[in-house]
Amino acid sequence: MIVHWNGKKVGQPDCGTDMVFHFGQLIAHASKTRNLCAGSIVGSGTISNKDSRRGYCCIAEKRCLEIIEHGAPQTAFMKFGDSVRIEMFDAEGQSIFGAIDQAVAQLED
Image (cartoon, rainbow, N blue to C red; front, side, top):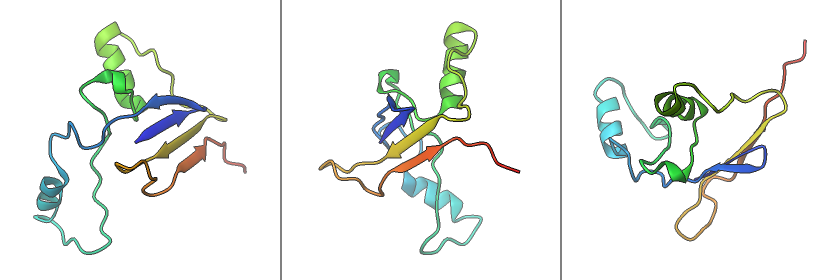
């Protein structure tokens, strides 16, 4: 997965590598309390690696790590006018689901 914030790459984690629980375990746990069927969506939380040089995909997680390391966050939250682009690629470099490309916009009345 590659994440760009305002055109700057901020993360390229290897998804699934450092997951505490793999998707099979997440699905098994979720199915204990609800019916899952074709089309069900199971979220895994933030995407990151133990090697922080891979960057980040969650600003809140990045800020928490900065607080632990520096005593205060150094990364700002997104603001109006910022953009984020997220795209996941397979082993051959092909886009899996296309890009999610969004701008932070203020709602108009």
